[in-house]
Length: 420
Image (cartoon, rainbow, N blue to C red):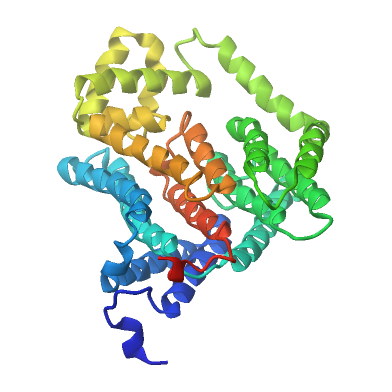
């Protein structure tokens, strides 16, 4: 191998060495991160560093097609605003963990911007390899989740994390890639296989006990089917759409007790909405969003976590029914947009919404990408009751999911290097 040919600055695509190294890093990250191995995060960072190096050495190549810079730019700005906010306000006090989390996720978003720039300009198709990766990851993660829930009888599957909700987010991304990989198969029996995979993947999400995932995943699966072109005929779409409700009923009967427990917990939270003591996850979330809006309006261009915390304490004194927000003032406000507004102000909201819109736009152009659309919608939906970009693991898995969904939908018949 001629090292000079790999690293010399040229106005052309990077050597295949970069692609192999970067995608191998992403593959290791996808296979190990869900199981709690730290090596996954390290491999993801190595892949992004290689992407940055390729971007620098082949800068002219990457700026040729301006439309391929829009999504990376949106991700880059989101990360930069996050980092700038921590630099401006970070203090070594009781809120330091909050700052450290945003510093970490901001760096991940910046790193992901260069990974996306690399992938969007990749002249070779890696669709088959990505589909195989999605299958292996899907089988491994779902098998482990089923083992935890059915064999080990863990009340709420957490994989190897301390929160079932994080496990649900990770499983959702992997399962959406898993389902789409099944639809890409050129086999006669891909419809039965898709339905079998759907039952398994939905079952694992039920075992996490995460209500948002239980409600959202079937809808996201349906969107993936409806948005799929070429690889799925209209006849097969009708069959799948007709059978999925039956699959949902079957899963509901099998995991009846799990679902009833979560519904009972929801009903109890609603019934206790007027109480001013005790733990109430539903009402606490509503209180946090109300407090985030109130404090955000007081500092439209952003404020420190300490300032927000003091404002919330004063607000709770005036409105004791918002007591549920107090345990979370050193963490986050359980809503992605409201959290950004309450501490990063209007700039934080603008870059976050720009990222959402860029992801949705790229789901339709230059070609329709059902799995990217589904992953984006899951990011938005889960962001209504949590802050995905606060969790390092959640941020990595969504960044990986976005990147791999683009690779998964690359048309192997198109040579993009000659078409540029």
